[in-house]
Amino acid sequence: MAQPIAKLALEDGTVYVGKGFGAAGETFGEAVFNTSMTGYQEVLTDPSYKGQIVTMTYPLIGNYGINAEDRESKVPQVDGFIVRECTRIPSNFRSHGTLSDYLAEHRILGLEGIDTRSLVRRLRVRGAMTGVLSTTDLDNASLVRKARQAPSIVGRDLAKVVMPTKTFAWNEGFNSPFVTQELHKSKRPHRVVALDFGMKWNILRCLVQIGCEVTVMPGSTPAKDVLALDPDGVFISNGPGDPEPLDYAIGNIRQLIGKKPIFGICLGHQLLGLAFGAKTFKLKFGHRGANQPVLNQKTGRVEITTQNHGFAVDPTTLPADVEATHINLNDNTLEGMRHKRYPIFSVQYHPEASAGPHDSTYLFDEFRKLMD
Image (cartoon, rainbow, N blue to C red):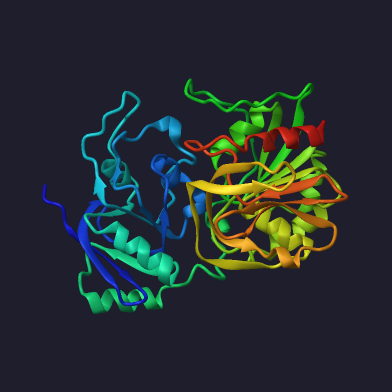
């Protein structure tokens, strides 16, 4: 069957013409790019990408297909997916199907055949922009108008779209023979409450792997309900979009400070910063990829990290009792912080990434030691 024509229109008036794959229709979102060479299934299923149209910079995507083991949530979360070339015949013994069929099954629009280098360069120079991806409306002026009228990612609470509605227990650890992360179990089990704002499953697997009994609660859960379970520690998860609209989360986290050991990742890091009284700001085009260099200021070591975020904590606004621990070597933005008096720390990047570098998995051991 012939592929339909598909177009991406950006709010600055630029239009890219290619071929559609996956589902047909129309969607909008913040156009961003990811520099990873592998791990596209993790990208697709990471809830942090809700509200975004993701462009992969690696030119050939889909070559190892799709499998059930590598999901980070039940379904794809991106609002659109752009590649230079989508492989129709994957080659991998773990593959259960093709990328195009997977996107079609879950009604996600894909675009291929455009010059992704040109698009990424435009986003780097102009910054991330709202875009409209369509196989149904092919009128350039109409698409650009829609892109300019679509809601910005700034000021929207996208976490409520992806967070669970009920509390549940998670007990699955690493179950793949290809996992190489080395994590150490506690001498005794620790009970952890994980506040879910759009959490990747591999975070939960890592927590189980260090010996935690994990109870997942919606990110909107009041602090009193978290404390009623008397956990040994609280984890604050990643999630999509702008942290500032999440007033309910910031207030709840503020009530947990000083009461339990706390570990935050990505959006959880930003929410902790806001709860401390710091400010956040939007990055020009964000950090998304599996090759971001971060300096650990305590050890002097450089960690290669996986990242996916469009907002950051302003280190100049941190209170006196919170110190920066990690710095991004590309742009000197804050990548980690720690409270000087309470057992609380967080990082902006993803130490649990799979596929991804494992330089930072020691952070789960640090959380375990705080609870020990």
